[in-house]
Every structure is written in C-alpha cells, then in structure tokens.
Image 1 (cartoon, one colour):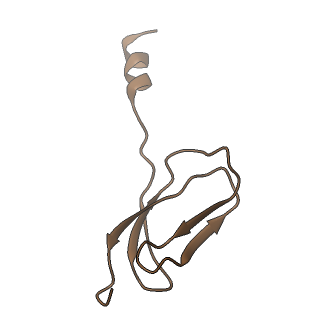
Image 2: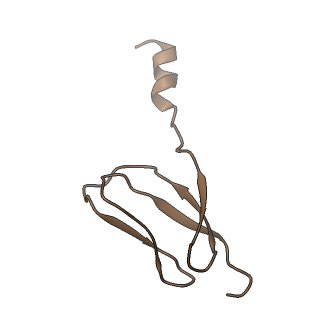
Image 3: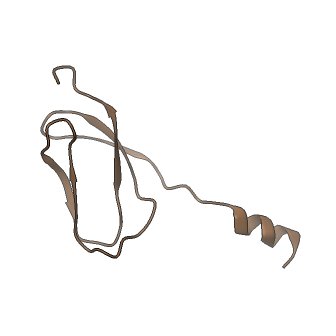
Length: 73
C-alpha cells in the first residue's frame, strides 16, 4: 500500500444534511443518513409535538436533530 492509499483509507465521507420540518407543528430538523441498520422498518417522531414525521422501510437510518422549535411551542 502506497502513501496515497493510506490517506484514502482515512478519509471519511460525511452524509449530506437535509432540513425537514414537522408537518404537525413546524419544528425544524436536520436529517442525515450516516449508516445502515439491520432493522427494516423505522419511524421518526417529533420531540416537540410527539407526532410521527417520517416512516420508512429500508435499512437506511435517518438521524433527525432538532434545529429550531416553533415559536408557539
């Protein structure tokens, strides 16, 4: 393995970040998909209104991080 291969081995690709709002209360979230899961069914619930924001059947994991609460929450 040459020096360039060693550098490439250490490079980490970061997932794209998207923004989504809860359709129920408007709370804003950043969403990334950093890894795969062994589970095939997943649900994301809003931490503000506790309603389901997203459901998916795949091994993709979506990580929701609250960015901004709605003004009336």
